[in-house]
Amino acid sequence: MTALWLRDPLAILADGAARGIVVDGGRIVELVPDGGQPSTPNVAVFDASRHVLLPGLINTHHHFYQTLTRASPSALDRELFPWLTALYTIWARLTPAALDAAVTVAMAELLLSGCTTTTDHHYVFPAGLDDAIDLEIAAAQRLGIRVVLTRGSMNLSQRDGGLPPDSVVQDEDTILADSERLIGRYHDAAPGAMAQIALAPCSPFSVTTSLMQATAALAERSDVRLHTHLAETADEEAFCLQRFGRRPLDYLEDCGWLTRRTWLAHGIHFDAGERLRLARAGTCVTHCPCSNQILASGTCLVCELEQEGVRVGLGVDGSASNNSSNLMQEVRAAFLLQRNRYGVEKVRPADALRWATEGSAACIGRPELGRIAVGQQADLALFTLDELRFSGALDPLAALVVCGAHRADRVMVGGRWVVEDGAIPGLDTAALIARHNAAAKALHAE
Ligand SMILES: [Zn+2]
Image 1: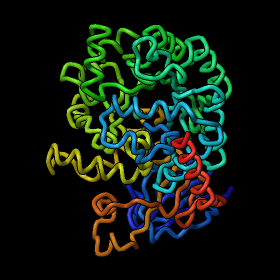
Image 2 (image 1 turned 60 degrees about the vertical axis):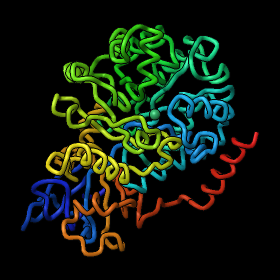
Image 3 (image 1 turned 135 degrees about the vertical axis):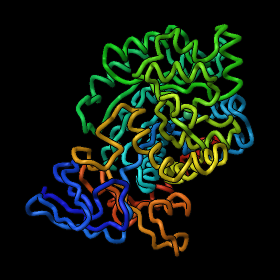
């Protein structure tokens, strides 16, 4: 592979790279300053003069399978607990073919929005779906997106005072054995890894204390990350107080989870003391603004968290709550929600872009991602400004956020183009939509 100079971008989210960057061997090897030329010999040239260059966006919370229950009538207009109860029985019917359609839709949608690395939190394992994570890995390889797939779990069903029905939970031994299998088979600890595994019990109200503790111990032994939902709703807080006599973060700490290995989805209902404990522990938080607004869960206090030293990333969350897997639109949603809370001085477009890049990279413990700098992975999102929505815009970087960019023209992962001219080469989108629509209808029909 010869070195490639992405030359003369319209704008770039990096200092000292006005004439673009050179990528080689899957990494960024040179920033070309104003008036400069690459010192790397024999570079091929990509004319980026129509493009705004961003580090590839990183999605740190999602449930791909939920693309099958978008705008599901049974769940619309409900808050988290009744929303979950309405959907669990539908999710219990998930099949491998339906999941394959769902994950392909989610990853394709993410890629086309400028996302280069995504996590997924898959925690529904009805009979016959034992290979869910294996299937996700295969789909990611086909599409060329970088993934951190979390092996989710639920073992506290209605029988034991939990929320999910008995048919979608597994026992602790099965969960831990499969977690070990997946780590052994797919987890690549090297910088620049295309696939990693993390461990992710669904939430305090759907797993036992024993499983929480055993999962933390396994993550420590295997040196993988930990992820779960926490402090999403007031209902969850009440559940933890009633069942454990502890607030959610206290309970998390009791289970051995308050460490720098952990990143938490939502993190809305933390008090000031809890935010400091998160900061001291090095635990990160994923902000999911669309999901939080649709479910009316509350607003994550992103500025307080950052001020106190907690790293904050972005996530689109599952498609049944957000209903969309567009990470660039999530950047705009985060910008709007947080600016409305904190004011124009404290929240700027660049902050929202930082959450989706550097902040998200911190959540998943991947310092080689999320920034345009020499030595970083060549993960890039290139946007054009030739749509009506951008016409007349003067500051190209701010325009992406305030005018509402939603579709990347080109996306590069590890030096390889995975989106060209606003499309994924080799993917028949119409056929995928037809297959996915049919699967979604079948799931609701039974
Ligand atoms: Zn979620």
